[in-house]
Image (cartoon, rainbow, N blue to C red; front, side):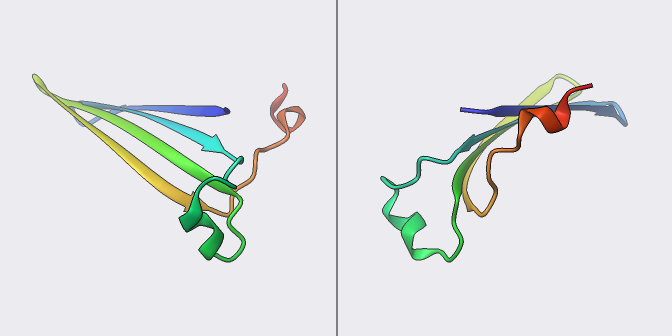
Length: 74
C-alpha cells in the first residue's frame, strides 16, 4: 500500500503526517455508495508541542488513485 509522508517544523512545534492509500476497496460496503470512489485513505498525524504529543487517525473514502511513480522520479 503506498505511503506518503510529510514533516512540518515551525512555531515551536513539530507535525508529522502519513497518508496510506488503498485502492482495493471492493470489501468496503460504504465506499460503493459514493460516486467515483477509488480508494480508502488512512491519515495518521503526530503533533508535538512543547512536552506534549498528540496523535490522531482518520479514515476517508476518496476519488484519489495511486500516482505513477515515474512522475516522481528525479
